Image (cartoon, rainbow, N blue to C red; front, side):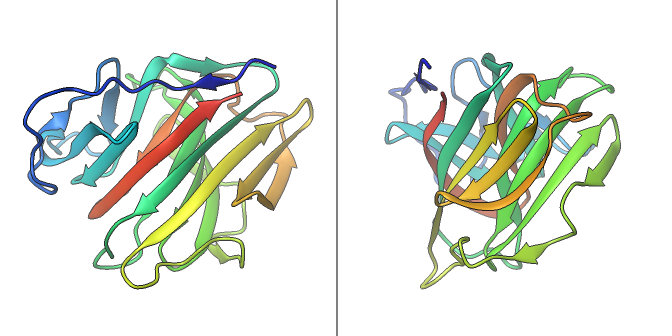
Length: 203
């Protein structure tokens, strides 16, 4: 199967200081904020080191419409939280993104947070549903230590099951039927985060 490294164009401009905001500055990518009252300029999504760096700001999802997948595929990326948040805030990947810019948005998402816990959810419109039994710890999820945390997250979409992995260890497997699976893949971040994403790819 063809492996696609999701390209991020490096912009040769003066980089803002983390936490300064500036919105989305990566070509082809866009954001949707959870709150209609939030301002995209209160976050930063920028190219850095062959990947991208996210500083929030409001809760948001980020995606490039060209990063779509159907059928069976694997989405993966490595997330490095570079400083502690004021409390455990979540981030991770989503698959099956549909209608992401309107009220009928839908996607399935896989999150972790700095205390080593994970959660799998689905969003349809304004409604969300837990697909795993709430936030749960797992030894495969690296918790923050000395102000830094790194985890590789993967979602393996099979014909009948979807596997969710951290650092190549399965955390959960759930039936594919009835879930938003075919569509755009992207990333999701809560607020008060400073995270670098590398090796983000679909294969």
